[in-house]
Amino acid sequence: MTRFEDILIRIEEGLDAAKEIFAGFEPGETAFRFKQGDDPLTEADEAVDRALREILPSKDEGWLSEETADSPERLSRSDVWIVDPLDGTREFVTGVPEWCVSIGFVRNGEAVAGGIHNPATNQTVVGARGLGVTYNGVPAEASQLDHLSGARITASRSEIKRGEWDRFEGEAFEVVPCGSVAYKLGLVASNECDATWTLVPKHEWDVAAGAALVLAAGGCVFNKDGTPVVFNQPRPKLTGMIATGPNLANPIADFLGIRLANGVC
Image 1 (spheres, one colour):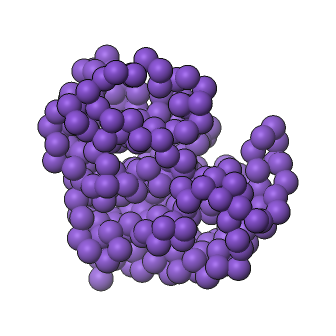
Image 2 (cartoon, rainbow, N blue to C red):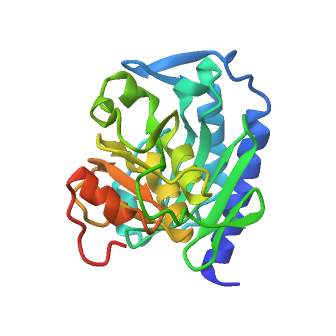
């Protein structure tokens, strides 16, 4: 087996374990508390985090998770797991079926393998660079659309509510509200939508798995300044990110006023 085939086996084991844990909780009926502000946390988040930490990392691999205290030790590792045990907890606790477990694997700062599973919709996307992507077990690739007219762009429900997408009203593309950003990226990788973007900060654990999936599916991922996305940073937070099929990268960059760096797509 190649190294990434071994990684994919562990990702699938992690997704299966998460699926089993989530089966014991009822979305919309699960108790929660607030970590800070209006950021909810449930026992499901914590239980999946514990299971993934047992299954995924070997002794020479780093770990970064939303629900585990961060350690600078990961910065000395070339291989790092970056996970969100439950991306879209707000949707989970309100019963909106737009949440998932998100497992990403990063090598030397590049997102190279990932997997997401949404138990509410029974959707699973798994893939690695050089090995492609499967969507519910069937090979998939990112959208080949080359123009924004008629494109389906998934957008954060929270960003829409705050008015951050008002400026795009009336454009030729369709804006589809959606919860979890990891789930949105999985939809891009599986060609269930054409692109997604967020122009506000996101933590690495929100997007590492999805970025790997989009890239493995032949798509493009870049920062809102047009540069490549680099993971496992001392401060693991991105200023924003765009993910799209390969032929929409330039039209979207032009539309958003972004100049793409050489080799981004």
